[in-house]
Length: 227
Image (tube, rainbow, N blue to C red; front, side, top):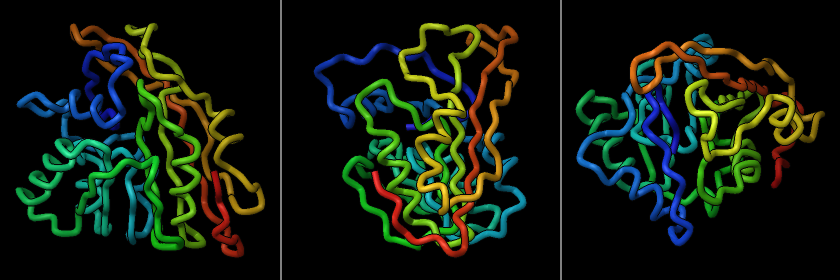
C-alpha cells in the first residue's frame, strides 16, 4: 500500500471497488509502481536499532522490508495486494534475502501474535479507500515486545505540487493522540514534522512534509493495545 520515493498519479477511487480490488487495480500494470528503494526517513530512524524481528504494514513491493533484511532483521511485510506481494517475493529471491518474507492479507482482519516483534513500521500507510488506519496500527503495536519500537512515517500535508491529494493527511499531534495510548505503555522517542525535498512528476523541485513518530514500548508495559 505504501509510497516509496517516487509517487505515481493518484486517481480518486471508484466507489464500487473494495480495498482489495482498488489496490490490485493499482498494481495491475506490467511495471512496478514504486522505486524499490527504502524509505529514507524510516531508514534514518531504524539504522541504529539492534536487528531483531520486524513487521512492515502495507509493504507494497517490499522496498523497506528488503532493506531491513539486508541490515540483519528477520523482516516480514504485509500488504493487501497479492500482486505487490508477489513482486516483493521475487525481489527478495533475486537478492538472496531469505530473511525477507511477505504475506498478502487484509490488515483490517489481520491479528498479530502478541510480543512477537521488535519493530513495527508503517511508511505512508494512508489510503484513498476505506481503511481503519488507527485500529490497524494500534493492533499491530500489540505485537511489540517490551523495548520494541513503533515507527510511523506519514504524509502530514499534500505534496507541494498536489494540493488536492485524495488521501487524508495526518499531523504529528494526531498521531500522538491516536497511537501513544495508554500513555504509561510508551516512551515517545521522536514526534516531529520534517520537510523533505522532492521532485514533482515533471522533475521540478518540490517538497513533502512528513510526520515522523517513534514510540518505544516500556519494559513494564502489558500487551494491551487495542483499537
